[in-house]
Length: 528
Ligand code: PHE
Image (cartoon, rainbow, N blue to C red):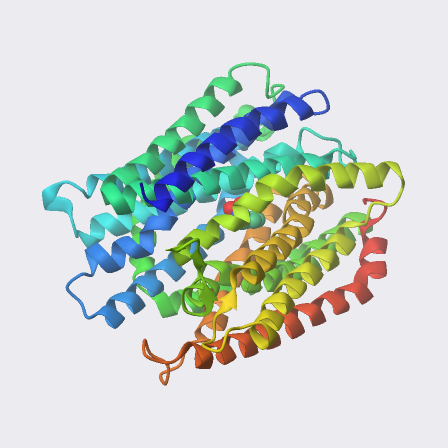
């Protein structure tokens, strides 16, 4: 039996033991809603990452099979980049819709339906006459983009509503929730990746769709009980019938407009360069709008709290731009420059991507416990300080790989596996110090009326970061390097890039933020 199948089986067994354990140990201290949202998000992420694991491979090996390899790859990366960027751009709209029109529950359910439709559309491409049909393919991706925009930010914001603003359990709850995210992505990479590549692409995509359906059904059933405490309904103005959109009931208008958005997105997916520019313009516009909101806010405290989100937006983007090397340059690095032989078998480079969700599963409860314990002792670091820690650990992770490359590589340029594993562990610890805390912070610092919108803006920093990640990744490629370049040469290129960007830039950002911590704490006005 091959190693991928073994890992798949072991992975599932591990999760089936781990999840009940986590629920059992946290059941008493958290509301039931946490677990409802945990599972809904786990299956949504299963679908998202399961499909993502296959996407680039499917394009290069099936859709663009007739093109020359380098042309096929660059086309695939272009579409992939625009796709992920739009995935994190649409949450701005999704957040607004939940705040103003539909409320969390309806918006989340509508998003889930669209996403499931998207995955099944990809699966349907398996039908003979549809294989390779580009408009159909783009429509599928667009359904996922729009659906994700409704689903993803709102499930995080919704979670925030089950805790008082300064509830000490809040960061812990987001750490547990974040574990759901990563259990989903861990299982997805192993399962959909295996089924899609070894059995049939379309079964892999179909599996992603089934995952989404499971999450959706679960969420829907739970929303009919009192597990969600009757929260997440439509805003008052809407239920009172005062709000109209284009003369229609808001619900109908949103459904209709989102269907109209599908062909528009599909068209944009084809314009990769345009997207990069548009993304920057839109992001700056939205940030400017947030600053405007902050400065003109009659309530000075509220205004300054929004400014804290704006400042951290940029540090968040720096973090993800380097962190996201994982799916790109770090995987190619693992392929070329890591000694992947274990007990006589070579581990495929892509499998290293499951190390991150694996470490999250194991370490999230530790972090969740750590914050609560430190809090009780009155020593919990503030949110901006946790961001400093996150950036510092990311930089440290890159330092480990640079040291491994400089001092421990074999004569033919191969770095021992333990350096890569250690780096991923540090990156993951950095992610846990910053990412769930960031989500939690947005729900604390934004005025209740615009929390969905601010959460959407927060995701935008990830959209920007994904584009930047691609640009940093291309620094490790050059025309002079091809398949025959000796590993000892590529090793130098990688370690230089990681030293400059990973160690110096990220480390520098950590120091800069450290200096800003006192000011940010003041602007947070008592929120931790
Ligand atoms: N792995 C995380 C997730 O899928 C990445 C992320 C963090 C995305 C924060 C959005 C916001 O949820």
